[in-house]
Image 1: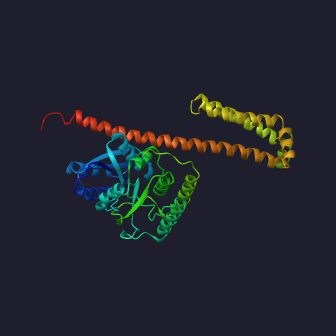
Image 2 (image 1 turned 90 degrees about the horizontal axis):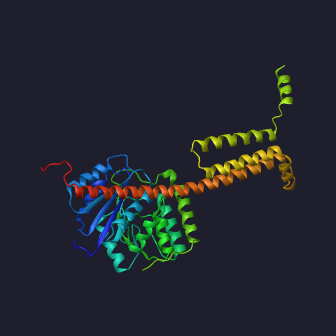
Length: 250
Length: 137
């Protein structure tokens, strides 16, 4: 694989992913040396840290950093820690969000970065619903309804067609990830962060990707919390709509 | 017999709304002062609770204030008391929600900074002390 002239950071939020974090990191070994990984352990109570350390000792490539939050703070805080890490360390052009449960396809990462570059996007989302994308694990009906609802809501409010707003597989350019380092939604952050970008004149886009079923662990969205999730995210998006737009330097 | 004793006691001890308010006021003062004294409550919040205590005391000593308010608002006396109590509880709960939201954000940022600092410390430690076991292997 050809090396890119800039460095890219892959952020993997991990909460109790001892069974899947090792295999997930293995899928990323095919990436060239311009990619670095930061695993943000979100206060796991299992052996996630041990598994990451084991991988660090057995693999030199790609460089894996481990940042450990002392307490579980949720997916939003974990992902934002990755963006903060990128800002503190410096030198990264793109920051990619990638799940630690084996759902995402590592071979699509260079395509996400290339799409950001070629189309000059601030945020490019990997969509399983675009033509050419696949949802190999087939979401539940309620989840699919939720995804369609948020896709319709964000498309309607922003005027930009989106198909997979809950996808956690996304590549952020400097303007987006620097803004995310400063402020990022707490829980269930993906649709809200996507709409925030569209609302604040950051360019967003999607490319088709394949997603797989979780290799192990539990989803952060339990069935019983689905209704709360719908209300909370809808409210957040609608409130964002009435906020003043923010200015960003190109 | 027991019933007549209770009625007799009730004649001497009038446990009406005014007395209850004065008791509530005294308790509010005592509890607030206890917590401020032991530094469990910040003076900032103590001021609010002492004001509530003062309001209760005022309403206990001058019961006609609430009666006049009830008359003007076309409410019965109990409804007026309930209305004022709910308004105070609502305002306090709102301020607590605001404060909690702010604290949550601050705590999260502190945890994130701490996690990154610990990472940087470990990296620095690796550079300055590449062989943590001491002697060469």
